[in-house]
Image (cartoon, rainbow, N blue to C red; front, side):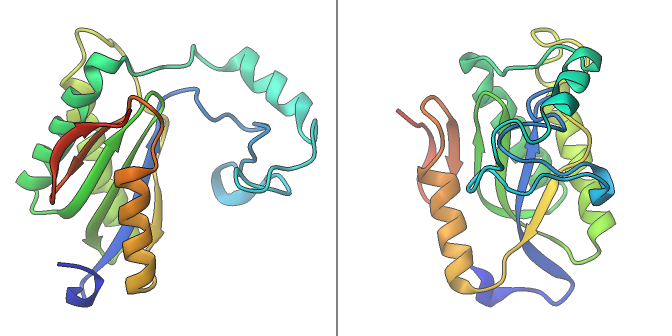
Length: 183
């Protein structure tokens, strides 16, 4: 299994979705709003200058609902629900991680971007329903990020990043190793 076995109707993606309120427009880690109408000059790897969009961040913090943080005990519930939802929809994937504010998946999804986004939306819904008693209401921000995998090396580095480079306490399900926590 890997990028070499790709179906021409599908693409391997690094899929990322965040919890509600965890990455607002104006964030000092860098940001892009929908359709890239406003974006910072940097990103989380190379942050923009301090205070670049400070006013925009303050504005969004006043308007946003409270930030959602996934408790340690609910991370496996969300990860397993996402895994089962993808399996039921015949989405091939190799690794999932759930941390306090986001989920990462290395998955093989339809080439049509909007179809992939809709499938991920269904997975997000099922994952949130699995914890609705403990985390009522919306827990995910809108949409998701789908980063196409461009080469076998990119596939391998993404798989390693999701499986081994997450924050302490992240729940990881890896096809090769099963479930475990990052410590």
